[in-house]
Amino acid sequence: MRRAAAAVLIAALVACDDDKAVPDELTIVVQADRREVEQQEKALREREDSLAKDKAQLDQRIADLAKGLKAAADAEQRRRLEEELRQSQVLEGQLGVRVSALQAQKIEVEAKKRAVDADLQRAAQAALDVRAAAVAAREAKMAEREAQVAAHERDVGQRAKDVALREKAVAAFERQGPPPEYRDRKQVPKAALVEEKHKKLLADLDARGILISDLPPEDQPLNAEIFAARRQRDFARAMDLLNDLTKAMARLRVDQRFVEAKISRLQGARGTAKLSDTQRGEIEKLLKDVTSAFSDGRYEQANKGLNRIAVILDAGAASG
Image (tube, rainbow, N blue to C red):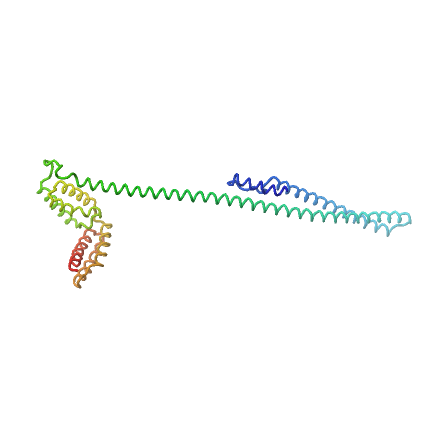
């Protein structure tokens, strides 16, 4: 009954405080059982030592009496020694009985000790089962929280995308500017000024070896939009677009990353272009020059070679 209560006590202890280590004896009840067994073992050892000493003394006394009996001179001394020897032999028999009883008690204590150990194992297993259940519950809660966090992050990511799209739309709207009829004619740039700035910008792009396709995807339509605004005589919007294109061009640097990106784009175009043998030969020669310049860190020279390849590919695409 006490051991059953011990298991319940252990389970309650672990359930209340599953972060603490389970004690070695686990419960007060099991500790008491173990102390009781240990005390019994100690008492048995002491009795066993005492019986061993008594037996040794008795054996020595019987041996001495046997020797004395052989050397007895008269009948009275012989009778007295025989009586003492008989009593010693009786004591020896009683001592044997006590030894047998002691052995039986030792067997009983060993059995009790094994029972206590079994109780400890069962109690420990019960504690582990309770702890495992608590850990599983915590993991389930953690998984639920992680799912909530993931859902929240998805919502935040979607909102960020929505905000980015709105900002892009607003920027495009602001770039367009107000319709011509609502603009101050005194502030509208002249057609000649817009044309001159556009030509200069295109010349700067050509001088730097930057193609329209080298611009970021969101900036590539700017040049076509400038031409469209000029045709519509919306010179204010054309000037705004020119300013945007100027900023986009200023952000570009003809460096290793720029050349690598351009090589990747032209390789894709090369795979779809229909080229003659002569054009393929020209491209192969140019590619060798580009590779050499790129390896030497001469990125502007490599870019010029790539531009010549782009012209050939455009011609091949047009003929195809």
